[in-house]
Amino acid sequence: MTPPDLQPLSLLSAGAPPATGPWTRLPYRDVPKFDTSTLLAHWPRLHAGQGLQPPVTGPLAEGWALYHSGEFERAAAIALKQGHEGLALLNQATAVYANYLEPRESVRLALFKQVAERTTAQVAAEPENCQALYWQAYALGRYSQGISVARALAQGLGGKVKGALERVIELEPDHADAHAALGAFHAEVIDKVGSLVGRMTYGVRADTAIELFERSLQLNPHSASVLMEYARGLLMLQGDSRMAEATRLYEKAAALEPADARERLDVELARAGLSD
Image 1 (tube, one colour):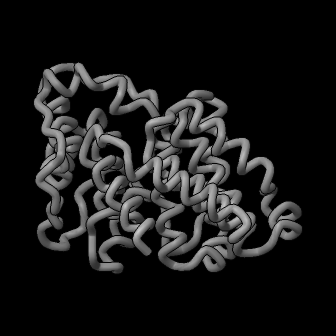
Image 2 (cartoon, helix red, strand yellow; image 1 turned 120 degrees about the vertical axis):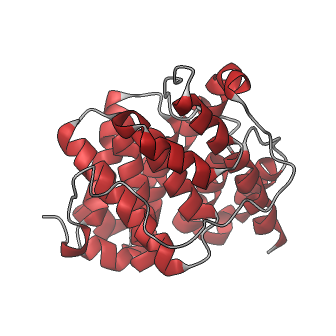
């Protein structure tokens, strides 16, 4: 049963972002910039972790170019005008902005909640829509972290995250981001409730987490986010005994040449993690 504060909404009612004022702008100048032609030329690299098909030339392609250039608010505004065709961009731009740049916790949670509500409605109408399933899991996962993983598990959100990611992998076996996210889910649940309770209650296992991380890296070895998720997963599962390996993964992430704005944010997070 859906928790009372996350009731599915219609796509229309879950459309526009909450009225929270202007979004925080990307703070870096050294971010790759895209127009529609360079976007399409680099699309396979930019979406190596997702398998999303490129848009046709037009407003939606312009929106994706803005997204990859770090203009998340403008990208979301364009996506919103494209109706159903813009939902993948709208969900991604909103969720990525909320995760990396929104400084107000209440607003972050409101944005994640909105993406979760919108994608829940999408999945109900299109149960094999991998983009909707993945961003549903992403938004619910980040929302869960915001309200505490223990509370989220008690509300049943963990099962929704796990089920959505497993369905993505079933439908699209080469979806690298879904493998990494599912590995992180296994690791985080084990970290919070222990391996025995995690296995018996939520069906999570440490060896499965490692297999998922390894597969994700095979599919997309140049992803800073995958490298960092793997590093965090190792520390959650095995603690300081894997610190050296986790540090190497962070160092590799920090040394990557970012392909777009989100990767620039990931590289910065890796550098910050190494300096802590």
